[in-house]
Structure formats: C-alpha cells, structure tokens
Length: 327
Image (cartoon, rainbow, N blue to C red; front, top):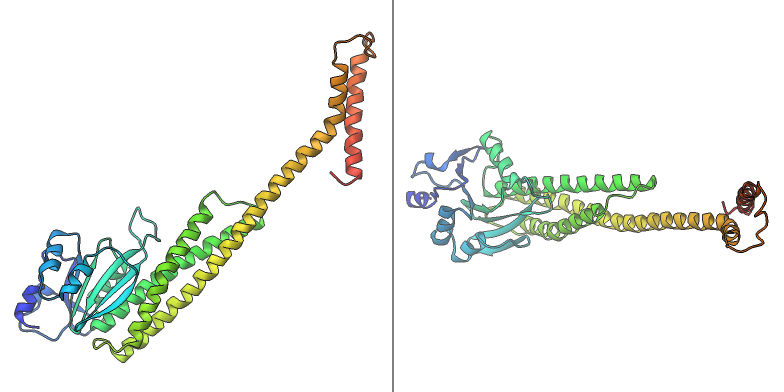
C-alpha cells in the first residue's frame, strides 16, 4: 500500500484508524510511515458522522457497490463477494444504555487482503474488545484473524444473552410450580426476544459457515477452522433458542391453566357460599314481609330465636356439604 493510499485512508472523525503489526499489536495510522506496505489497515467509522459519511461516498479505495452498503439501512446478516473484497453484515447484542439487548446492533465490514473498513451507527462492544486485545499485543494479526476474533466475541455476547433468557425461563418455571403467575407482559417480552434472536442469529450462523467453507484469499486454513468452530457454537445457541421458544409455549399454556384453575376455585367457593346462605336468605325474605300473622311477631324473644335458627341452619347446610365432600 503506497503513500497515496495511506493518505486516502485518513478520516478526521474515524473511531479507529490503525495498522495491524502482524504480531498481535497495532499502531495508529497517523504514525505509520508512507513507504510501509503489505500490512493490514483498519478503519472503523460511524457512518452518521459528517466526515465519515463524506469519505464513504467519495473514496476511490472502496468499490462503488460497497459505499452505499456500508452506510445503508440495517439488514439481516449476509456475505457478498465484491471484486477482490467481501462485504459482510453482522448483528451484535445491544449493550448500549437505554436499549434492550434484543435491539440488535448492525455492523458492516468490507474486507480484502490488506484493508478492513467497518461501519456502525450504534456502538458495538465486540469491536472495543478486539481493539483492547490489539492494544495489549494479543489481538489479530491479519484480516482473516481479525474477522474470526470479531465473530468469536459476537458469538460470546449472543451466548451470554441466550443464557440470561434461559435463566429467566427457569425462574418463571420455578414460580409456576409454586402457583406464582408472572407479571403481565414478562413472558411476552421473553418470547419476543427469543424470536428476534432466532431471526437474526440463524442467518448469522449461515454467514459464519460460508466464511468457513469458501476459500477467501484473505483467510488462512486455520482461520477457516476457527470460523467453523464459531459457527458450530452459534448453532448450539440456536438449538437452545428453539428449546426456549418451545418452553415458553408450554409456560403460556401452564399460566393459562393456573389462572383458569384459580378462577374456577373462586367461582366454586362463591357457589358454595351462596348454597350455604340460600335457606337463610329464603327465611329472612319470608319473615320480612309486612303482613299480619308472622309467627313470633308478638313474642319477646322471637327475633333472638329466629337468629339462632338461622345460625343452626347455616351450620347444618355446611355440615351436609362437607359430608358430601363438596367442602
């Protein structure tokens, strides 16, 4: 890569602009001598920043078909060959504040033998982890290992989030064993997160598998083997997602059953209470008419005897219901 190309990679508001030293470390692109060539150079941009957007729209370093894709709308994970390079779109768990993890972040990468250009709108924490490894001297050495490291971290984050969802489902299941119905909307949110993860992680697994199977010139055999391991690991995560989706369906049915049983018990209890007090209601209504000839109307203790009769009647009906095993 000559001096003109080095100057062409200068972007004033670039998030990361560096050159991999081939030993696991990196140097800022501004410190790299113009005559040095053959090393991997990495630009990481926020395509909503003015200078980055202008560079993406006008740079001759990128093919015309890549410029719009690197600054385009979010899309599902995919990989496309474009000339001597490859355009890759991936999804990351959203760890940004005031955002849910399932509101996945898109990262787009154009990569060839000596150049990596990655773009995003919201922060991608996997990129920060790879940059930290480079700063400590134990990061990727070339384009292929850089991509494998990024995909490895993305898969780690996805696996951690899937485990969190799995733990939440276990808590709901334990609560249902004790007949504790979860708050309204909690199960629906978990199911939505599972479905969103399944929708995007399945094509992302396919992207990893294609990267591992095709012979890209910038990936070594060791990188392809590592990428296949990453794809297999994400595949196991997808199996867990499918199992979790099935378990949430069972949970929804069980919650409906628990709520129906609770309603039936309440209805049954109210019916028994009505049955217990039905005779007394009849008698109080009968003796409450304002007509002459009511028995005990002139007797001093008539009301007391009538109340005692009602109590005995209630106890008798309750005893009869219990003997019939309705109570």
